[in-house]
Length: 62
Image (cartoon, rainbow, N blue to C red; front, side, top):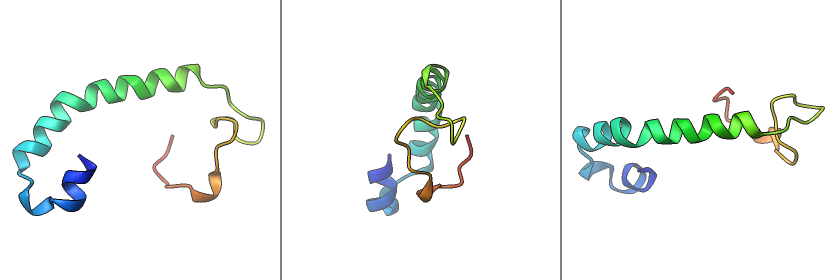
């Protein structure tokens, strides 16, 4: 999807984006939630993984 939106945005229809959200997002969300459950926080950042670089924080939240 990133490639499509970044390089072929002029060819991307709203229907393509909607289908991606409806069909692909739920499984991605479930996978991310499982990662969050199984990760071990570090002492400096209780919600982070060891080795995560917080200097480039995207501001997207947890």
